[in-house]
Length: 242
Ligand SMILES: Nc1ncnc2c1ncn2[C@@H]1O[C@H](COP(=O)(O)OP(=O)(O)OP(=O)(O)O)[C@@H](O)[C@H]1O
Image: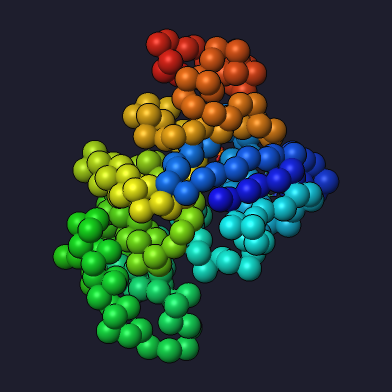
């Protein structure tokens, strides 16, 4: 179980995430939703120790997550990745094995096999020698998905994985997320896509600096909760936000 307890993150003394607590069980996909600037990315960065936290703690299997970061796969927002960096698809996917191999050692044959299987799984094996900058948005997102698969992690964090992708990539992602779930992994997806992606989530966490609601789609998607999180700027039609 992943336990986030009273997590708070401040930037220059201003609170971006405040007193956030929730638990996730193995085999669960949780979607984190909320308006722009709600603190969704900051929450993930706080959980992973990528930004200093003002309060709280994060435990996985009753131990501090910081001591188990080898169990964590994280794909940041597209905008946080330097797509002009001269690196091939295969090298990026092999980076998923670096935690296991170490920086200074050559990747083993087994590592290469695992990376190849991950690339096959998401349909990019034929692109393995291409630079990441030459790929479409969907292919690029699949490279990072393959990297997480190669890592053989327990906990998966994806920040806006559905941005800038094609239908084929979307369905591969949904399939892979479902497979990971069946393997008992924990997945946390930040998403602006309030359509199909949400129905794949077992739980939703509606955030606006604090947790506004946490639970099933039905529990979270009430007009009162949406109003509290998004204010008057949204119109709700049959549980779709426009
Ligand atoms: N490095 C930073 N320094 C200062 N303030 C920051 C920093 N990163 C984010 N913020 C601020 O913290 C708040 C939360 O930002 P965050 O990016 O976590 O929100 P978000 O919900 O992920 O937004 P979006 O949906 O637009 O990606 C915003 O007000 C943002 O301007």
